[in-house]
Length: 107
Image (cartoon, rainbow, N blue to C red; front, top):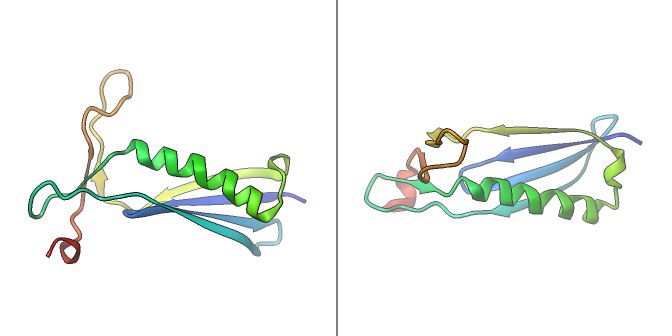
């Protein structure tokens, strides 16, 4: 059977979901990561944590579900985090990702 994985890169963690070919959710896992507040009304995040979270969540998702990697036909990724990651010529992050601030989290 063919399956699809969706990964949502959120502000506080990544959620990975496995769908069946007929659109049923078969399994889901989450992988948290921190937001850093270096000063009031500022938020930052190490963008490498997003990739690490996906690299850890997908194998856990497959193990938990028992689905073979050979049965995955697509992986979709989305993110609703409003922020920017400054990158250099070679595509590496030059600084933490500057995020939108969750005011309730810093009060």
